[in-house]
Amino acid sequence: MNLFSTLLKPRLKPNGVFYDQIKSILGFTPKVMAIYEEAFTHRSMNLKNDKGNSVNYERLEFLGDAMLGTIVSAYLFEQYDSAKEGELTNLRAKIVSRENLNAIGQKMGLMEWVESTHPKASFGADIHGNLLESLVGAVFVEKGYEGCKRFVLKKIIDPYVNLETLDTRILSYKSTLIEWGQKNKVKVKFYTKKDEGLDPNINYASIIKVDDRVLVKAREISKKKSEEKAAKRAYYKLNL
Image (tube, rainbow, N blue to C red; front, side, top):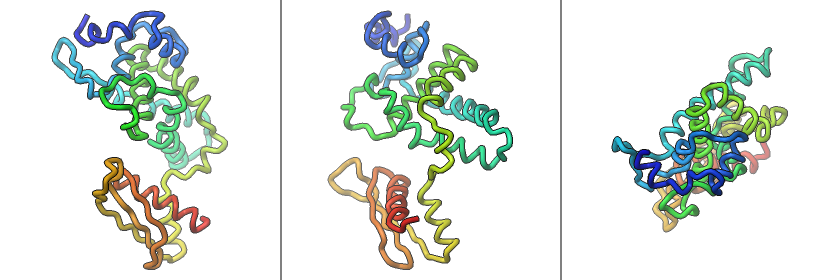
């Protein structure tokens, strides 16, 4: 048994709360609980295995991200037999977008089981999607491609992805706003700068000007999120 498993042994026991919850989320009885413990371990725990390698969910997150892209691509290829490459790419992007994965991970209640030295309230929205990807990676490690595919389709796609409404969702309000400006010969400009305010979760501030007139403002944790938040406000303010 490696150091990681020894330190977290109480959570690995069959019939324990964590074991029962993971079993419920997965829809099957896990055989290698240590991999699921790793999938819910934040780097702040500073755990290492017997080889001295760091143990947290980030490697599984990387693997799960790749598996989700592959499984969703194959699923859409089968579901939309007449769709062109661009259409399939757009649909896949909407399903595996950070915003969508965050929402799914939150609905699944994955954050409740993360092991971290940080208060859960200090995490941003991305933690939900990160845990979802790491869980998918863990399933792949234990069950292989076919088992991972069954899990993704049954536990993620079927309950949380509505293909009928998916095509109408906007993936990027910023891109939509820029395209609208180009089409209608309206000058749309984004101005974003560092925001050194008191709130540590707010690092950037964005302003959108339309024909040199300030239309909306927004603040967020990253430049990308700040501009996207402002663009969404502009989208609705302009009744697009």
